[in-house]
Amino acid sequence: MLARLKTRCPDGTSLSMALTKRFINTAVRVLSHLVPRAEPTCPQTRIVDAIFKRMYSAYGVEAGLNRFEDCNFKRILMFTHDLLVYLGENDDYYRTWLGFVLLSAEREIQIFERNLTYDGFTKAMNKQWTTRAWCRIPSALFECHKPDFVQLVLADYLPNLESHACERASGA
Image (cartoon, one colour):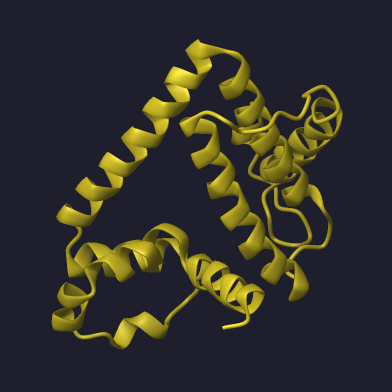
């Protein structure tokens, strides 16, 4: 129902997106108090924990640049992190599926990288991101550094923020 709303908010976002975000943000505020924290001890939950720690590093840089007006996205990250670790630690069925998601994501990224062409890269970048620095990259350079360009397609500049945050934290 919300997806059919075509009205725009003053900031340019669609009314359906604004309402969906408001609903999700409210639900996460409530639900986050219901999920107990769990210590990641299983391989699946340790991997999830490491992934979210990397995301928190990138988020910290973005937040420091005033990218976020509120803490809603951080709350969603923390809730998702807590929920996945809790379920993975306390229910072997969820833990199995969590492992399957991790393995499937790795496989799908490998397939995506293998099939990504220079034209596919430029189309994906144009469709998703406002970054335009890549548009002058020769196709030969693309082929030599394809894994780096896959990161750009999938996460734009965030892997660089996370790397920068880790370097700063280690004093490098």
